[in-house]
Length: 376
Ligand SMILES: *[C@@H]1O[C@H](CO)[C@@H](O)[C@H](O)[C@H]1NC(C)=O
Ligand SMILES: *[C@@H]1O[C@H](CO)[C@@H](O)[C@H](O)[C@H]1NC(C)=O
Ligand SMILES: [Mn+2]
Image (cartoon, rainbow, N blue to C red; front, side):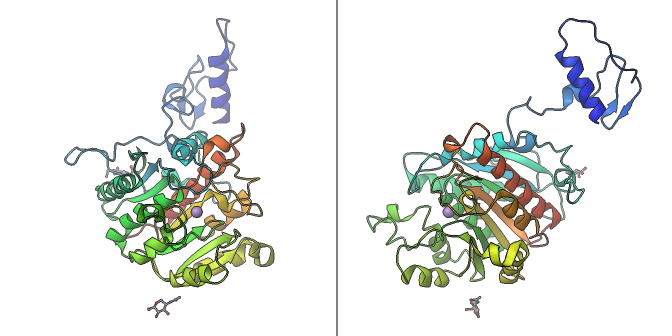
C-alpha cells in the first residue's frame, strides 16, 4: 500500500513533465492493480481530505430525514449537538461537532488498523455513519434541548443494518455538557436506567437551585447540573462514577453529599499517580459491573496542555495517552451510548491539539461499541 501511495503522490504532483515511473506495472496493491501510468482504483475513490468533512470520512446519512423517508441503515451513528448557551465560562462548543470532524480527517475506514490490537473497528460488523448535526436554536435553551431530545429519539429508532442488534447506538459530538441530558433521555427509552462513566474535571451534579443562582428554572438547566437532573428524571443508576475530577466544589459538604445521592462514586485526577491506569480501569469496571453503560467524556478531563480548547479548563489533568489507555481498557463493557463534549475549537492552537485528541477519543468509543454488540 505504501508503494501505491507514493505512486499516487508522484502522479498527482508532476505538472506537465513526462512522468517516469518505476517498473511496477501489474503491482498488486491492496486496492487493486497499479496500471502502467501509476493510476489505480485508489486514485479517485479514496476520499481522504477530498470529500466533505464527515467524522473519519464515514458516509453521511441524513438520519433526521422525515418519517417515511427511506435512508441507509446503520448500527452506530455519529450525531453532532451544536449547542453552547448553557456554559458557565468560555462559549464556543457549538462549533465542537465540526471541529471534531476536522480533527478526524486523517482517519479512514480502510486504513485504521490499531497498532495495539491489529483490528480496524470501522471495518467490522457494524455499519457506522455520520448523521450530521441536529438543528438546535441558539435563542432558547429549552427549545434547543427539546430539539435534541427529538433528534435522539428519531436517530435511535431507525432500523439497524444488522438485524441481530435492533437498536442503533449514538455517539454525540458536543456541544456543551448539557447536551448529554437529551442523549440520556434517548438511551432511557431503549435501555432503561444506565450507569454513567463520567470523565470530567468537574462533578456536574450541582443542584440546579444553587448553580445558576436559583434565578429561574431555565437558568438551572446547564452544563454543571445536567447529571443532577438526569438522576431526578430516573435516567441513571446509582452505580455511576466520575473519573478525573479535580475542580473545586462550591459547597464544602453539601455538593459531595448531593453527588452521592445522585448515584456517583468519584475518582480524582491525582489517583492515577498512585494506582495507575490499571487501577483506574479496575475501579470503573467494578462500579458499573453488570449494567449497561453510557460513557460521557468532557474533554476538560484532559490537562489544558493536552486540550486547551474547552469551556472550563482546569489544570492538573490527565494526558491524552492516559485517557485513551483507560478508554481502550474498558473493552467488554456494554456501552449503549457515548459522547465527547465541551470542545470549543476557537481556543485551540494551529496544531489542533484538542481536536485531534477529541477525534481519537471518539475512535476509542466507536471501538468499544463495535467490540461489544448489545441487545435490549
Ligand atoms: C450491512 O448489511 C448488508 C446487507 O445485509 C451486509 O452485506 C453488510 O455486510 C452489513 N454491514 C456493513 C458494515 O455494511
Ligand atoms: C443502589 O440502590 C439500590 C436500591 O435502592 C441499593 O440496594 C444499592 O445498595 C445501591 N447501590 C449503590 C452502589 O449505592
Ligand atoms: Mn462537564
